[in-house]
Length: 375
Image 1 (cartoon, rainbow, N blue to C red):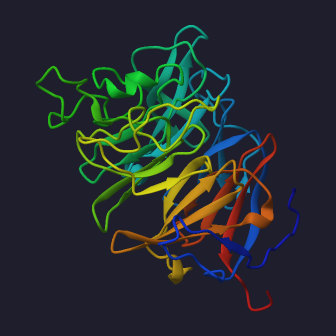
Image 2 (cartoon, rainbow, N blue to C red; image 1 turned 45 degrees about the vertical axis):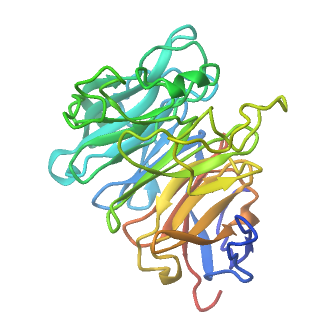
């Protein structure tokens, strides 16, 4: 679907996690959807600058900027070369928390060759229409030979450290249970790439110094809730077993020893859905929805959504609202199904509206705002 001057009214379908969890019989809010930018080449991630401008990454390696509501036709120069193959490419552009004063941006991307590639983080200064002072600060190890399961989502914690999800490389899923390597983990680093001294495996030989948590498959969403002090992440399962997890220091989240999913061939991956010493997920989706972007809604435009989690669903072509009350999941809702689009990212804008990104060769950035009186 291409947008010209299209506005969409409220429609939503409800879905319960289990019969014991409430779902929504009626749409939770009236909204309209309007286009912000069109014809992006597989846009992957959206972020906001303090002045309201938006950074959009294209998987093929372009960094785009939307200024004053208009997409600049010229990509930002100076992006480091990316390994663009399969699921690999340019992932996220995350502004520094003090961007207003330092103009620093962090990029996550696939780097390398077919035989040796990995997720990498670079730090750079955004100087109007170009990146300068580009410095590689972190590379996931070991290098792998598969063009899939990179993770690549980042978030800042209140102490100024940076966390990033990594994938298990698909063919190396057992490594997710070996925290001495960086496949299938969440890493935590300082903004210069150094390792915080309070990471769980610093000073011992039980894991890599950069590991914050492990036992993950392919996390493509991570968000920190400042109100509750909770770090949430979601990850792709295989056939079934997509998860939202509450991330805590040094914890093991099970993959592949414990999973609700089965292999793509139909074979059983593990007989266990949970195991002692491994954390159980907050939410499980079977069949898979293919979770991509992740947001915590903290705006004022939709009071009904305040404090809820929003998950971009690729396979199920919607945004999943996870209704949280005091940290507990009380229901779920499918939103924006009328678009009939794979959704790659979802974000809360500084204006309190919700923004979504569609996953295709001519992808869109769309704004979700409260329905006007005429709608």
